[in-house]
Image 1 (cartoon, chains in turn blue, orange):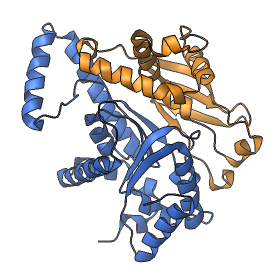
Image 2 (cartoon, rainbow over the protein chains, first blue to last red; image 1 turned 30 degrees about the vertical axis):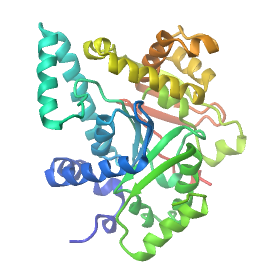
Image 3 (cartoon, one colour; image 1 turned 45 degrees about the vertical axis):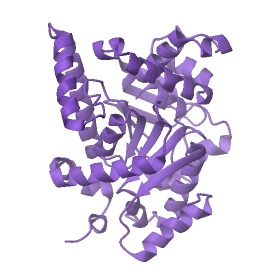
Length: 222
Length: 137
């Protein structure tokens, strides 16, 4: 099976059909969740308060969902409008569920039951299922640089997205240039001392080296 | 798109950067949605504390004039012209700030760069900030 990145632009690969497939494959969902959990651990964010996190290549919102479960506020960007539409659907459903609870007669009883179920599923971790999503979505190509003012975010995660920057999908796309734009803008939009955890699938060791070189060049350590 | 996101968003085309103003984008709203706090969040003290903590943490990094301008474009004129130390410590203010940042959504409309005129449409709450390679430096 060939890599998705070789078939063309990410937004072409993740069209509506692929987006739905990606989002409904439970194995895929499980893997992305695990990777995101681990990424959040590595971020070592302060306990007890929500952080403002940038999710690069947020796709259909799988990683965003995990960020929400940890109580964080996030902004996601992705080049595929179809994937973002799916993320939007998820957000809509949550909002409608929250409003649905409002219109029931016996609100407190329903909420209690939900809490109990959630407690059983997740052990001690509280599930804020009834709350509307604290995620916001942008249609954006990370290779053009992140469009935010300096020191905007407490942290950044990127799950299984960066490798797309290593391929050029049109005559005017130069991978190294796009990688440098991405990393230098990422460095700027993070608050001082903030962390970025970036998980990706390099096709070759050259790609892996290219990515880490660009990161180091703009000042990222570790 | 929330007002929090609008506050940090900038036009990063080469043309905009050459102006050296780092201006926020002007909002033209055709459809707005304001989420009212749900029963759950109103009565859950832990959720309230989280909201206050978030607002407190983000306040120093907010561009207040941008927030005023954005809120006004979205029909909200109740924010104070500046934040005093007393206000910054007031839990009622911080909760209201959280609501303005997180619950006021631009569903459909346009974001315009005041320096270059470049437009970024917003549809279904998603802002389109896709740039061509030729617009970048």
